[in-house]
Length: 213
Image (cartoon, rainbow, N blue to C red; front, top):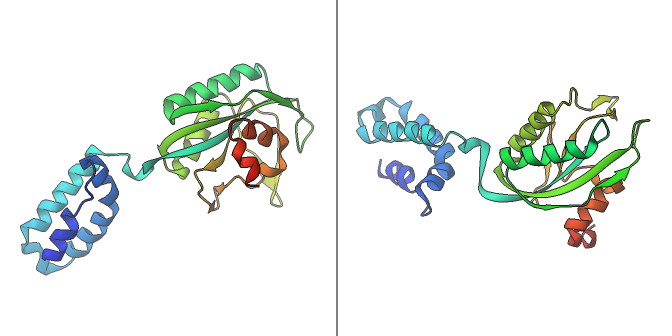
């Protein structure tokens, strides 16, 4: 029982909010395991701790959506419809409001459409800081695209992308030094090195990257 108590209250010595965030998943696992055992029902400590956890979940509702540290992220922005420069500006404003602080913005570059016969693009790369996890960050960027008027994401046929003109495109290029490969997200971006319209603005605000690839 003392082991359980120590694990429940052995929170890291940072702020109480960070401590709860760091341990919320572990607490769930511990408490659910012990509460399933009939013998533990007599221990008020367990019940009190469970109530504390529920309160913590209310007080920090975005814990599972956030990391415990600030992450440095590079995003690629592109637009080839209507007022392209304004679309880039609107995207940056939305990112600042909904995702995190903008640390740097590259110049805006114009490039031909790649992979399909489309209008020329304006492209830009920005550097941001965010506490959002990679998966939630992806979700947020897609929500911003939709709010700004993008009606569909890139479709795939025989595992090959089918590109089209778009009001705004937001891609996650780098998330710290994280490497991810899931059905929904691959980091670093798998095609970034092939794209001059991505690499040129990226190297402008992250010049050391040129020495790493």
